[in-house]
Image (tube, rainbow, N blue to C red):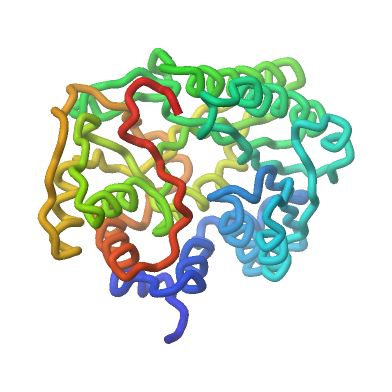
Length: 351
């Protein structure tokens, strides 16, 4: 079967990891155009995580299509050597580095463009020291080393307070109210980057991301697994935002053209507010199951307004309904999963 092309995205689901990664790394036309204008090399820090490999490959493909000579360099500890080998097979240069080692950070190749993907969330309750070091110390060392570079850094919608589903979601200028130590450390990461942006004049963009969705992980993957296990779906968190990973990848890279000092803050998520009960029912029908539910839907949830992000970075190409269909096909056919639950149903901020 030939690889999926952009025009195939609404017609059939990826049927293998190879096809999936092809789709997740296909650059959009606006991204290719941006790469033709971009000056200087690109470094992606924390490239070994869930988003990094396909984002780095997308950047490499966009550079190639633009006919640019920009180097794309991926940095990670690479505890899984196969990830490094895969990136290099895609034409991405790699450098092994622990971002918690300031001496190692100071040896990283300099670049005019930096995407910061590193962070620590799950397991934070068991290792709070690492939580704060990874989310606050590492950004400080990176900001010093890449002083003057454009830096796009991922943050999270967890820094907002819960809002009602009919509110349209929190906007970039709304009051912050991080719940739990992870959300507080994520805000600390933002404040660290903001400090260096203001004191050094480094242009930055801080992206508050809500639930990027691959077919190997994501909110709908979590719900589909519960359904297949015969477990009731907890709907106390009754609404969520999700964004297809390819769209999140493209928007993150395009944010390089929207860095400024002091740092620009942009919500990155899908346009829709997804009702968890409805999504579970749609997944159940596609899987040939009957959905059962637990809990009572709370009046509020962590939701973000995506208006500014879409105005600056483009609208997502893949709607939530399509992600639901593709997820049911992927999980229902026992295709590979990363076994990294989102824990979107957690309401006390403890991960």
